[in-house]
Length: 255
Image (tube, rainbow, N blue to C red; front, side, top):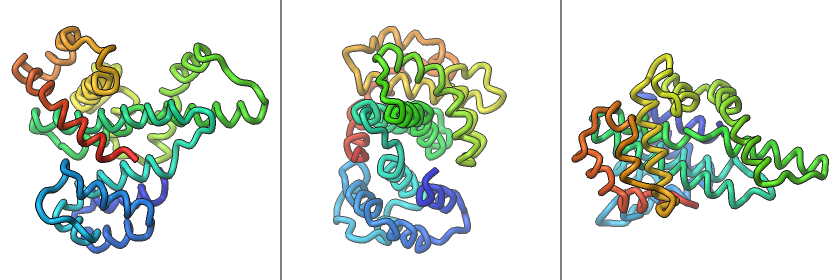
C-alpha cells in the first residue's frame, strides 16, 4: 500500500491514536489533503457549516470515517497508473468505490463492522488494476499490444494470484486478506465467510451502479448469497433503495 495510505490506515485503526496525528499526516500530502476536504464537504458526508480545516474534518467526521476517505483518495492518486489502460483503471476504481459504499450499507443492515466492510469492498478487486499495470509495462518493453479478448483472459487468470500477493505484501488485516482472495468463493473461505459473502454481494450491487442496463435486479435477488446472509426480500428491497445514496458517495469520492 502507498506509504501515506498505509500510515493513515494504521492510524485510523489505532484506538490510542490522536486526532491531531491523523490531521498532520494528511497535511503532509497536499493532493490528498485537498481531496479529503472536498469530499468531507460533500452532501454525502456533512451538512451545515463548511469544513475549512483538516482538524475540523477529523473532529466532525471522526478518525475512522476520515481514514476511509483518505485511503480511497490515496489509492486513486498514488497507484494504479497504467498507460494505455486509463479508461479500464477508472472503471475499476469506480466499481471499487461503489462496492465499498454498498458494503457499508450491507454491514449496517446486518449490524456488523461498517468501516471494515467498506474497505473490503474498496480493495476486493485490487489484483485487476495491478495486473493492468504489469501488462502495460510489458507491452511497452516488448512493443506488443494484446487484443481485448486476450487481455481480459489474462487479467481474469492472473488477478486472484496477484491479489493474494498484494494482500500479504501490503500487510492488510486478516479480514481484508481473506475477502480479497475469497469473495467470489465465500463458502470456501477458511474464515470471515460472512464478510466474504457481504463483499461478493456488494460488488454485485456495484455492477448495478456502474452498468444498470447489464444487471438484472430480479435475478440478483435470487442469488444464493442473499439467503446466505439471511436477508429477506424486504431487506433486499431496502438495499436497492440505497442506490442514490451510494451513487452520491461514489461521485463525492471519485477524483
